Image (cartoon, rainbow over all chains, first blue to last red; front, side):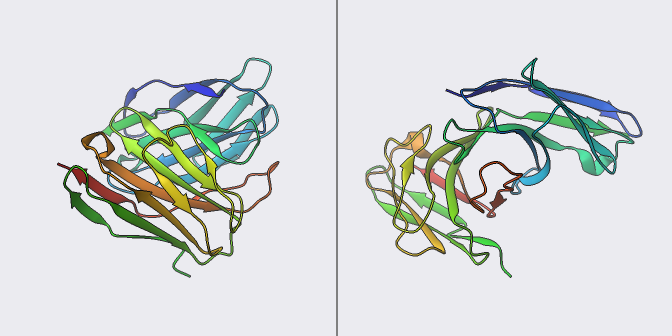
Length: 110
Length: 115
């Protein structure tokens, strides 16, 4: 089956850079996704990596190393509004549904 | 477009009662999903559907049933609610492109308490 590991909590200050790691074990790999969820809200899509390397979208970047079964989400120039939970996810073996990690709660302080 | 909507937003049940959660999407997506979210457990897949008339089990299907009679709707049923089913339930939908970004769009959630 699919399983993912990510830290439960990360803290940082405004303006800093933070990296949230994710390691995974899968039977069949289609790519690694990242979702953001603010407290009380719905998860929203952030990024997707199917190939090795870095994908950049504004202040957020995501990295994937398929040989290491490892990826990370990099958040730069942190803002208070970045305080949220971040989930990495992989598809199930059939490629028909996402399996999520338990999430990393990021707290940004001033 | 409303995106993904869920009904109801909140519900309190007594043990043994039944209820149905409704999810609707107006994006013509083929795939729809039901997740539950509990503190410290992330999002766990309950059931999903890859098209009208089809359903499949996810990670935690026991105690739930689903139906996808219309492409735009995905129903989650609890036949005999238990306190362990107290959770926040999220519905999501996506296109059917397996080897792609295949972004999932989530509804606002239903907060269910079973006493």
